[in-house]
Length: 112
Length: 114
Image (cartoon, rainbow over all chains, first blue to last red; front, side, top):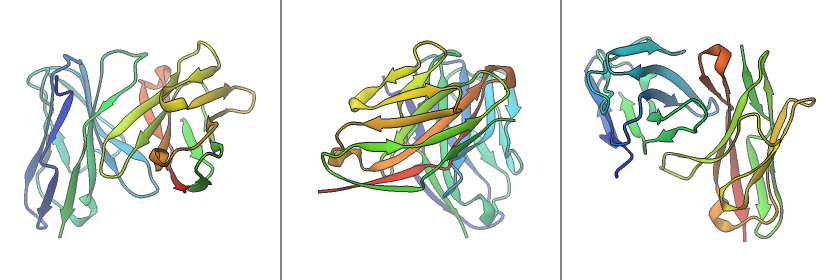
């Protein structure tokens, strides 16, 4: 049981490049989400999904796309990276309303 | 809209002394509250949660927190700090009526001196 697996752990992109951050979970959690962490700002929600085929925007969705074709995977796409997207990205899942979240170990992204 | 304020961005304690991390929240609805810990270059780990049961919540690694509705606070404490407690701590609020969105405080970085 690996929990929540994020890949890659580190990535450097040039402005305008695209990439996909991967998130996979083996806990059969319906709820999955992406957060970005910036110094002094805690974590902010980018996008989330309550099940396969269902996604919705969080508080900072601009510049990011998501899809959820399976319960296990929830990739985050940057179509045209910008320096403002330099951050640490966390994928988080949840089994039910009254349970805590399980976080992946993060992807540290630098856009130059 | 809900918000979370962690009153100290940095806390420094000596090993063996008590730790207090302060958190205040603002919400029009009854909240669920969480404390998470993040060790360097790691993901977030749940320490404890309050979901409208007992107001004094015990978590892992000797931490506990008390929900005080009148003060809109959820402070985290530990009687005796250990070197392994050096990390960043996040207070988080979740409101069911607001779509279960998580709102994070800005974090408190704890330094433990030997």
